[in-house]
Image 1 (spheres, helix red, strand yellow):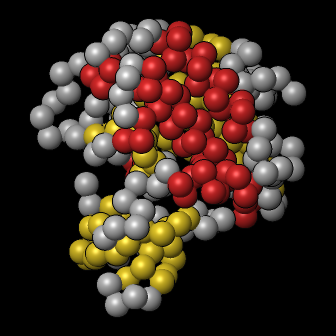
Image 2: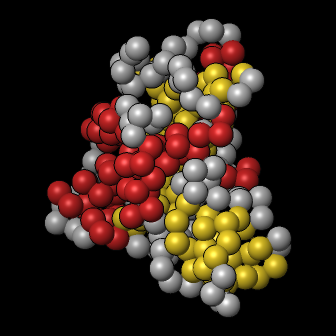
Length: 252
């Protein structure tokens, strides 16, 4: 099986790298580990169909094709955890190399990556199932690398803003592919390590945070994320419950 990033397809512009990758997978043109990288993404998408903006030529807009051989559909959130950990690891490493506090890098459930409270990366994973198994997965990653001057109110940041250094897309892409490969090798083999690491980097873990639950304001204390991707929280009355993304959302 090819390593992630062994094949990189670079596009000048595309509507969505996830759309492009999914079409290529359906047509049998892209093998496992293929990376689709776009200098410009005109209709980038995040969670819940939110728009994801990247600065052309300055930020990473990419999708990774994964073709699992034996991944049950019930375990597909392990891919989301692994992808978030891969991005987290790269961001934390680059901040640490610049003398910054890597402990400020956290994963905001389900799979945004933050520096302190500002979003530096978003991940959108789209899986195709065949029966009870995952046939293919497209992991879309938007990572703010060298962009500057984020609009007020966006609560966003970039690697350059955090480190004061220009990074370059190829450097970050190479690190990200290697990190993805490392975590991918653990999926279905060492899910306990994946889950433990994800929980350890979980944003707002152990403190009360503001959510919406079924559209209404709600406060709870995040504790962990279960195998199917539900956030386990402690309610204000002390009870512990698990909620899926369709019901519970952080208030930004």
